[in-house]
Length: 272
Ligand SMILES: Nc1ncnc2c1ncn2[C@@H]1O[C@H](COP(=O)(O)OP(=O)(O)O)[C@@H](O)[C@H]1O
Ligand SMILES: [Mg+2]
Image 1 (cartoon, rainbow, N blue to C red):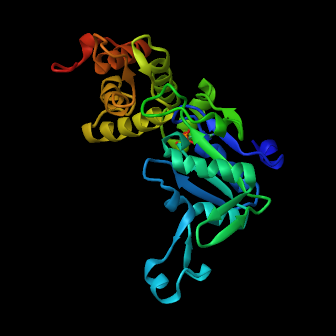
Image 2: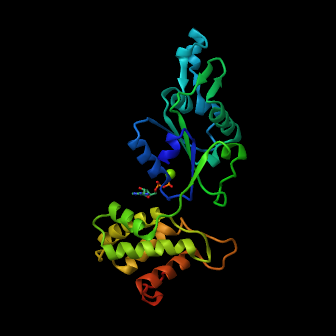
């Protein structure tokens, strides 16, 4: 990523949620001393919001003077030579994307009534996106792909994932954390699940398990309390295949029991 940016390339980071795209970018921004402009990509990101606008009240008195233009994130990044980080670029409307394409290929932006803005040479666009097959995302155009370099992010490997969870919850018991990560990783390869949980699920699970244990006066690694925490932390994050016969709760319970060596028969009545 650093080499690509040094080589004057724009970059797209592609990977499922929770694979460390934002973390990587924040760390790159911290290491290079370029400034960093963050934009959340969504359907409301119109060209006007990305570029900026003339303050309507001041236009009445001063007219379309450059001094009354309120810079949007793109103009700020072009002027300052900053890294413009667009999260979830595949949710951005087509007309806004077209603007970015022009900026990337021409290195300049034409703003109506403001004029032509040249990009500072250190301006870079870094975009993050989920892979095509995930829910609610569209394919971005070939015109974008032809102007960016691509870095694929995947789920952390097991030991890194344990380290991330342990770093967030230093108080948690190591064996419990390792098993929680094992359950979460198993959701990603489960034949009945289209989408598994990222490390965020493991982080939340460990946090909830510890609070729940406190409230119930149980051990923080109690497998039954842990299962309740797992259902809360994971059931909304995993997606079953359409028309699957089983509930996600039942799949998560199975994975939990298989990893912790417990059995559904030990669950208190009413569970499941
Ligand atoms: N290399 C890393 N070191 C420490 N924590 C990490 C690392 N990569 C990811 N994380 C943690 O994992 C979670 C998801 O990472 P994030 O960068 O937000 O993913 P994405 O942007 O791909 O959705 C966050 O809680 C983040 O702090
Ligand atoms: Mg992110």
